[in-house]
Length: 173
Image 1 (cartoon, rainbow, N blue to C red):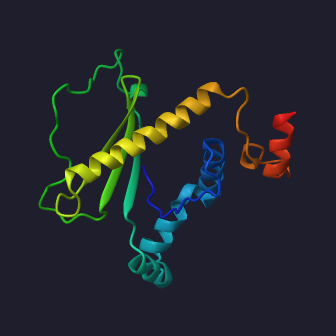
Image 2: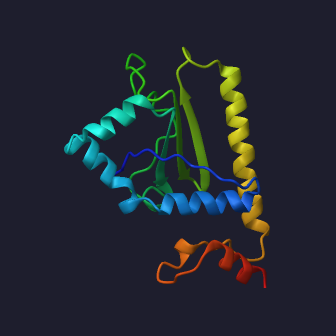
């Protein structure tokens, strides 16, 4: 099962550590991992949510498909096909989002694929975007590999009343 919900991420910090902390806290602040949005929007047909969605349509959908190594691996009876499965959506279908970023872990590797409309973007623009995403991911990975301690945030300690400033001070001592 999956949930679809709007989420605008921002960080006042330009440092990788600050961005990680900001994104982690914003994502974890979603009630019930975002499932309530779909219930309100589609089941309850909430007019306010419909108006807001129409006024500010999403430009990107991010879809993390999961860790396929946990279910399809060398011990599984079923195996992933080596050849391409082709497009998962008809090219005739109208796009719901201008850009799609789909990620998964397969064969021990984190993989991402960008999908886009050639009517909206040229290949050169998408290649530049893909390169920027790769550089950003490499910066996050490098940061995580070389820090001495984890970058804890208040949501890591849900039973404690502690601010980010307090945690940062404790982690530096």
